[in-house]
Length: 234
Image 1 (spheres, rainbow, N blue to C red):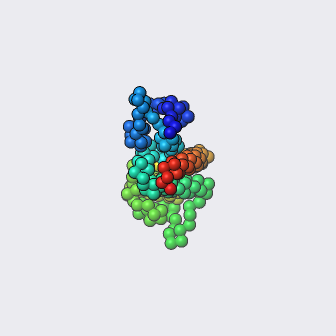
Image 2: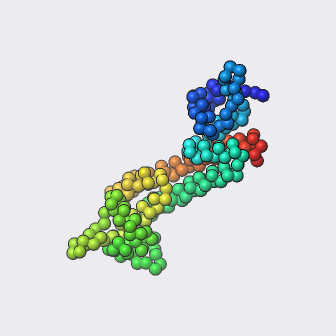
Image 3: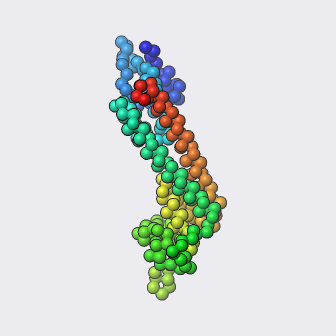
């Protein structure tokens, strides 16, 4: 049987030999046999585990990758594949939200609601009903500084204009993706400042990031399938 030195694997993967030992200690790579000199005897199987691990990290993250490879060690490939599929489904939802966000920014016309009438000023209840968002969510976004509604001078009640309605629809879409949660205020502020180009740029960058992640995910799946074939699990 052919064996690989740790430095050989580490060099090909562009990591340190200590990283290999860390992965081994996590229980995501089978423990290797030891030679008479105490050195680890890594086989092609270990090499395949390390390759898979490194390929999956960028697209699936450390935690999920480790969970998947533990399932492979337990000879549960179907369970592992469904974990991967679930993460791909999450990314698909982020892509849908990103596309919807860009569409909203490119076409700032508020979509027509057949049974709902857009008014120049709406109460929080009317705004919630029109957008399909709860009043508690609207209040939360106001607390976070994402929305600053007008106030009725007589009674102090909130008043939402068509611009506020557009922002509520936009924020509701942005909340569907983790990436946008980190950039939501930048996009909303850009919209407030009528800097649509900046808002679109942030959104387009997010879409590009999603494209990169799906590429990483498929590279990871490729290595995962290779590993399963080597282990004769398919």
